[in-house]
Amino acid sequence: MGVLVDVTSTLSTAIVIVSSSSSIDPYHLEPRNRRPTRVKSGKEGINGLKVYKSQQIDRANPVMAQGLSDSLLQFALDMYGKLQSQNRGGQNIFFSPFSIALPLTMALAGARNNTAEQLAALLHVKNDRSKVQCSVTKLLKQLSEFAPDVEFHVANRVYGDQRFAFQKSYRSDMENSYGATVTSVDFSKNHEDVRLEANEWVLKQTASKIRDLLPPGSVGANTTLLLLNAIYFKGFWSSPFTAHLTKPHDFHLDSENVVKVDTMSHAYGYKISTSKELRARALEMPYRGGKMSMVILLPDEVEGLPFLEKHLTSVTLSTLLASLEQNPKVCLTLPKLKIERGLALKDVLRALGVVDLFKPEVADLSGIFESGKPAVTDILHKTFLQVDEEGTEAAAATGTIMTCCAYNTLPPTLFKVDHPFMFIIKTNEPDVILFVGSVRRP
Image (cartoon, helix red, strand yellow):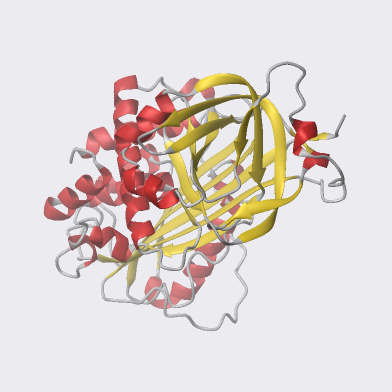
């Protein structure tokens, strides 16, 4: 009998919307020559997260929650499609539509006219700020209940230039609806200190996983607004993997190329489903507590990922997830994963129809400041994913899949993740897509 070790998923993501009164290239990189300054802890609760006590939490309107869930699903697929179309090098894709959507809804709260219409269309929500904020508030409160089964922290922060006074209603919305800390700073004199402080804040919120979200040169004297979001998630599987069965196995990059990757093996009762339309199977891996899960989308063919990506829609994905059924005998093999990605999203969002937001003198964010006409310079997003076995490097010894899947009665269903695949990480009640990715090379 092997040693059982909890296999964890550790995920961190951070995003910033950089708004300036004139054009600044956020990826004009300069040599790093300063260490981040220590940020004093404020009144944000544990790790900077505004903590909601259980007695403060109202039950979310299920219709409203479902509407936001549907909107995030469509937004996630739109984003994935654009990112994949730009993925010329065959890299792994990983992003958090939830983390991207939150600061975009924060921008929507202060957007007006055509700028607001474009943002609402991107997010697949009606241009009704009060309803959007109400939905977000209730969802954030629901997510705060996930502890202690999983570690799931969401934190928001707003930096505004002291030369421009916040609209009182906007400050109130950020603090009350998003639990955000709103701070006025002097970008004209202290933009580099603000950048370092913001990076230190993100580092703290993500358990030191996301470093340097804001690269040198991304914040300048003309910056007027930073909208920051950070998410940290760490979960343990409901059923642990057997440590001594983790060993190198073949992973087929395509029909001709094979690499060896450390692969975990486990026999368990998983929910699985099949889609002829997508030519793929799905397997749901629940996290401890059952409130969140990771779903693997595995193409039937080694080179089937492009077909899956092309035909994946909100309808086909929802149908596949709805058809998941418990299978008491599944033998799963899954590569250990570690993915880190940094994305500049301006071009992606412009391709999805958000144009005015990035145009000086055209962007209408008049609901944020009492004066001034800021435009968004760029939207920067960084993610970190790790699926591994904690403390098992010295324990990886012997064991085979045959041992993992040894049953005395009917043979198990084999779910062998040995070629490019997609995955999503989601909450279950409400059903919200938090992370989306694809793995071409583990």
